[in-house]
Amino acid sequence: QVHIAESGGGLVQPGGSLTLSCAVSGITFNRAAISWFRQGSGNKRELVAVIGRSGGTNYGDSVKDRFTISRDSAKQMVFLQMSSLKPEDTAVYYCNVLTDTEDSWGQGTQVIVSS
Image: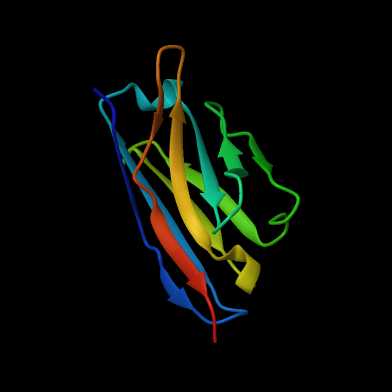
């Protein structure tokens, strides 16, 4: 059974940086595409970034050039480095793991960008 644990959220000032972590277990990590989504208050869940099995990446338009997704296969973790944060980045950030047989979500980690 897949287990997903996000961490690293918190309160940060506008213009600041934060790194989120997603720890994954229970699957063959290298067979998974892993994504970060976010959902702000009153908003739909939106794709933030995705990293494929071979390491290819893609980003939502609103975070391009500010966020970077990466994966560490040895640790079975995915990271989301966020910089130049804006108040509109405030949301619960979720990690999604997608394989041929799994489509699973973590519980999320809250990010608040505010002065």
